[in-house]
Structures are given as structure tokens and as C-alpha cells.
Image (cartoon, rainbow, N blue to C red; front, top):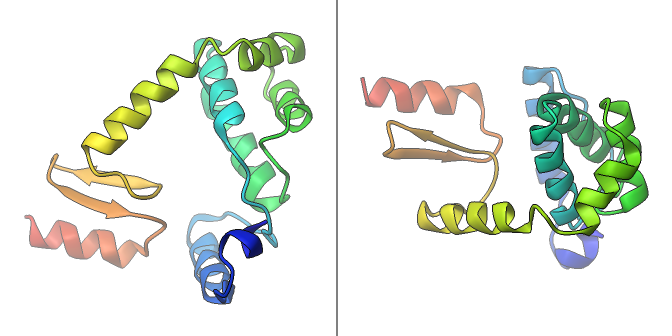
Length: 148
């Protein structure tokens, strides 16, 4: 639970900021109380990438987590999202359980550490400037104006 992970913090401003951003991009953020371990979902995402279904899988996973408030760390949730994304349930779960994508995730983690990744999404502009998190469009405009 987020409340356990961030004891003593008032998360209402975090949620208010998300709800402001959701209107800008057309996403509905539900009442989010879980902090899922996304490693299995990320492995399933790599399987989806290899099957040519990554974008749809990613969109469905995002919706399940942020809008529906589902625990995307659970294999049954991942399996349902896989089917919704046009993937075979058994093949997806097999790819998640056998760890065949663990090395890809480990490499991505190393790359993230090298570039100083502290949060997502991370936008890197001109291999020099970074914007971390769900920022207002003005943040991007201001940075782009500065580096023109």
C-alpha cells in the first residue's frame, strides 16, 4: 500500500497533481492505493514487445494500474491484460515465470543508473537536459525555449 510505503506523508497533493495532468493528456487516474512490484509486468511487456504487441500491452497495463487500481504485480492481472492485448495467456505467463527477460530488465536498470534515472517518465532532450515525472506542458516549453 502507498500509505505504508510513505508513512506520515499526505499524498493528496500528489493525487491532485496527477488529476491535473490527467486532464491535459486525456487519462483518468483512479483512486490509487497500491504500490505494485512491477517486475513481472515489465517482463511481460518485453514478451509483448517481441510479439509486436508492446504499445497496446503498455497502454492496457497503464490503464489497469492507474485507472482501475489493479495490482499489476499479480500473475492473474498480467494474464488478463495479456489476453486483452491479443497475447496468449499461457505463453505470456511462461515468459514471466521462466525469467527469460530478466537480463533485459537488468540492462535497462544499469542504463538508468548511468543516466541518473530517479523517476519515470524521464525525458532526455539533446542528450543533456532531463525532465522527470509527469510535468506540465509549460515545463517542456520553458526548457525548449531556454535551449533554442
